[in-house]
Structures are given as structure tokens and as C-alpha cells.
Length: 392
Image 1 (tube, one colour):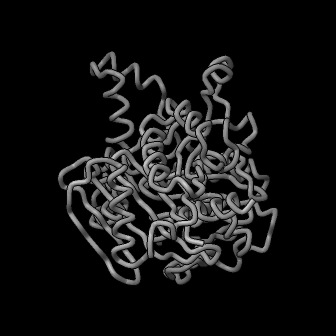
Image 2: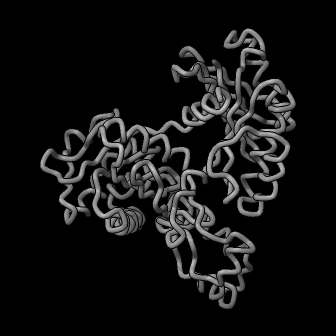
Image 3: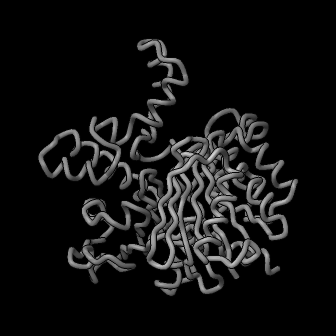
């Protein structure tokens, strides 16, 4: 069974074609700058790379061009070789507690939920409609970033604001990176051979969040109503005093759009370092003696460890801390600095293990809590859901 895992952005379309149930990647790629005369197409298969620059007017054209290239390069014999399509959707609200086969009602619900994710849900819908138009005879499945966190208890997801704002407007913590957390938690359960494992998972890329997981269920997570809440990230501030908005308005004459842009696009690593939003650049400058880069790095590390301490108490103990995503999987220094701050939990880094690039345990044998690196694979998780739901 060949399943297409799709992640549609406002001007991009990323995909993986996966053979299921073997979970073998057949092809992957992306179409970037959709709507631009200089659109870029990337296609990877069998160790080969195709790169094309040509105008792509809209997502419908992007989908058609993608399927043409899959056939031209003999990755598919024809379009009917695609047996199912899974679509990443950022916000499922309280409506969806699991992935779902897409029909007109689901499309209406995703549209209604767009105010909770105005930059993402409309873009996800564009991709869904384009693929459904081209492939009307296969099942399409919506896989939501938020569903994994629907197991959080109320005391963990409610904000201390007038309760009516939650009841009427559904203002609450939703959390994100849920598809990644589902995949990693499932892999951790197998590695640890423990169905009831207490885990803290760190999804660390340009966006960073943490999740407290017990018996494969999310108890709490650091991102909130939006991905801005939580720890400092590449360009996002993470938690700040909400009165900062009023202060900037009154004293710097910034309107709400200006403040939102500062907190989302000009803060985090970029804001503190004044140099870059990329962790690799921050570490390089820090090692060269740049004090602001050092500060940007250690502010993030400290805030991450604050959450780990809180989640340790929430879980009533801990079996493992797990690192995943771009930084979590590829930065031994970041992992080392986080573990070093957690000595009170009797967890220690093994420097030799920490250098190996594969799923592995990086803590010492004497540690009471294990530290692991588990590469995430959201596309496979999406494909698993398509397989599960279409085989019912």
C-alpha cells in the first residue's frame, strides 16, 4: 500500500511517499514558494535528487506537478498507485481526539477551527482540497497536531482566566508537535519494554516544546493556545509577562501586530543573540566567546530544565528523558548541557554514548533515569493513521 504523507503550508507543500505496512520511504520532497515565479521543486528517490525551478501558480497546480514528476521518474506507474493520503492539520481543537477520514463535515470543522490557527489550518485545507480534487477515489485522512494532547486533564490545560472564555471561545492550552510525540512515545515504549513508562519528551527544532507522557498519554505540554507559549525557541520568546504587550504599546507606541511579530519572529535565539535563530550558529558563536550567544543558549537550557523539574513532579517520578527533532537528535552539546543541569534527578551524561548518531541511550549506567535520543518520524505516524483508518 502506497501512502502519501502531506504537509501543506501557505506557500509550500512537503511530502513523503511511504510503502505500508513496511514503513519504507519510496520518495520525498517539497515544492516551495508556491505562487511565485521562482517556485522550487525538490524530489528525492533511490539516492537521486531532482531540482527544478519553474512558476507554480497555486496548490492545485503544485499537486498536479508533483504527481506528474512521480510518474515521469517512474516512482509511480500512474496516479492510481496512490492508495491513501494523510494530511497534517495543525489545529483539531476539542472536536477531534483522533485522526479522521476527511469528508465535507470534517472540512467544515477544520474551517471553523481556523481562528485557533489562522496561519496553518487554512493552508492545510488548501492542500487537502487540491489532493482530494486530483484523487477523489482514495481515502484522505486528517492527522491533527493537537489530538495527542486531548488526554490532558482540565487542571493542566485551563488558563486562569474567566471560565466563560473557555466555554464559549475554547481558549485553553492545546499543545502542538503531537504527531511527533505519538511516534516517539511509541518507540520509547518498545525500547524500554514498559507500557506504563513515565517520559519527558523534548521536541527540539526551531520550534521547541516538551511533553509529559505517562502510559503513552499526554499529561501536559509546554506549548499552549498557540506555539508561542513555553520555552524560548529560534525566533519565539516563549513565556513572558502578558503585561509586556501593554507596556510596549504605551511606551514604544507598538500596536498588537507589531508586538505579536516581535514575540513570534524576532525573539528567542535571534532576539537574545542579535545574530541568528539557528542553534548551530548560536553554539558556534558561543564557542568563539560571544557573550550574547552564550546567554541565548543558556536561557533556553535553563527554561527547558524548569519544565523538566515540573513534569518530574507531575509524573510522580520518571523513567526516561527523550530528545528528538533537529536539535534534539543532532546536538550533543545541547543534550549534555541539559543533562548536566539535572544532577538532582540522579541522571548523568555518558560523553561517548552522546556522540553516536543513531537511536541510543546517552545516560550512564548508574543513572536512575535514562536519557535517550529517538529520531522522530511524523510522516510515518501519518501513514500509520491512514493505514489504520482505511483498513477499518
